[in-house]
Length: 81
Image 1: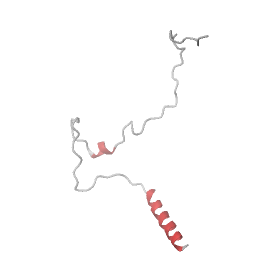
Image 2 (image 1 turned 90 degrees about the horizontal axis):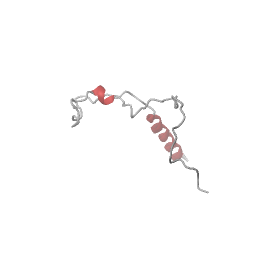
Image 3 (image 1 turned 45 degrees about the vertical axis):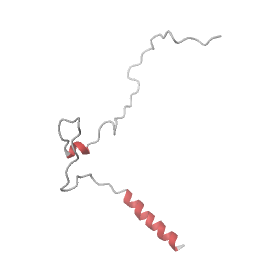
């Protein structure tokens, strides 16, 4: 019973550490990663830490912007029979 309590307390302490969030910073006295082959210049620390639009897309609430009837489709045939 005592070992279960110790394991549970240890699990809670480890789980509590998961919620800690801090700002990312480059390591001191460490070089930046190598320049990508297709890049014109070496990306700065700010460039590397900014999130791109594919990683965090913008939500679009208005799905239908302009409602219009569909154009006739010559392949839209009724079922046979």
